[in-house]
Image 1 (tube, protein in one colour):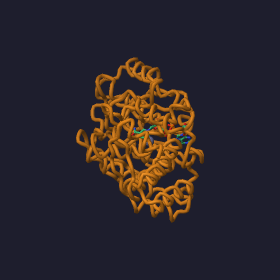
Image 2 (cartoon, rainbow, N blue to C red):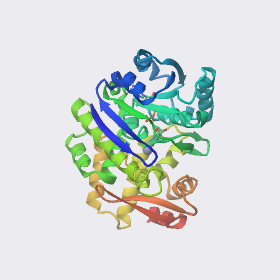
Image 3 (tube, rainbow, N blue to C red):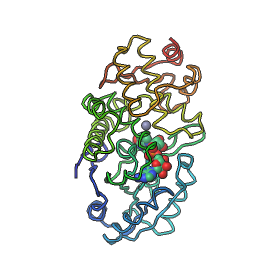
Image 4 (tube, protein in one colour):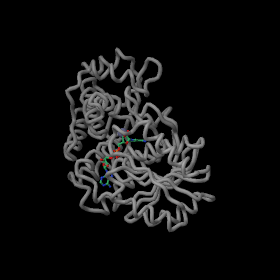
Length: 355
Ligand SMILES: NC(=O)c1ccc[n+]([C@@H]2O[C@H](COP(=O)([O-])OP(=O)(O)OC[C@H]3O[C@@H](n4cnc5c(N)ncnc54)[C@H](O)[C@@H]3O)[C@@H](O)[C@H]2O)c1
Ligand SMILES: [Zn+2]
């Protein structure tokens, strides 16, 4: 099993990556959660039928009493009602501060399991078991947890680092092809903003990183290492971590305007494509570099544009929580593997997009 150590300012922990990694859960949980008697497995209706039994068996085998909370799959359920359901489940089962939560699912699940853990009894441990590509390379690592509200995505949440992230590559076998593609939105983002070696590997793989499990594991490892490196430097998003927001300022607007029906990774790809084009027009990115990046997105079946207007993008972006005061931190890639943060006022952003 491969290991990435995350050394965030508030906490250090391991991300373990490998086939059948779930088989390490019982022992790891015992070691990491001393004094724990109970565990809550948070999962959803697509994932629970596939993996709940294996996860439960691991925890029960290690002597824990296990309860579960299964919500209806989908971003539209990433809300406070489900969190309240998790709190109540733990309260009813008599959880104390030494007990813990396990998040079993995609990014919706790991974000919510983490948030429920961060708030219950003012914070208990969470172990993340991501089951989607996106959750493995991004959502489960770094401690951002939260929920959506009608005004926007992830508007309520907490920084709450997990005790462990266990990434079982075998779980990806059942992931639908289009959901795998969505995860490639964040994978390509990592390549664009900070990892030329990952970019080359993705180009060479020619649109397929799935059929070769060794390659898949290596690419996931590279992504987790990238994300961990950023989190180690800037856990709470005041500096370099903001570069992970590449494509997200506009992506989030597209996602929200669709009533959260368009998947996150797809919207991020569109947002990145729009920013690449605008960067070229503004003389901040070489046209050939942008072409190579867009070709990579297309190679992995991701979109590179959207019909959103500059006005709609800017108005939507001004409601984003990433805004500080009156300025937006817009993330630009100035060459493959290098991102810069550019502060722009509303007017400047509009001008940048309209040129
Ligand atoms: N916390 C962070 O730093 C961070 C970073 C990026 C994204 N996110 C969040 O992550 C979410 C998106 O994550 P996602 O794309 O994983 O969404 P998701 O959790 O909705 O999963 C996508 C789909 O795949 C299904 N699925 C997941 N694993 C499966 C498996 N192994 N087999 C079969 N089906 C499976 C799910 O049921 C769902 O239908 C968004 O809410 C986004 O805001 C958070
Ligand atoms: Zn994202």
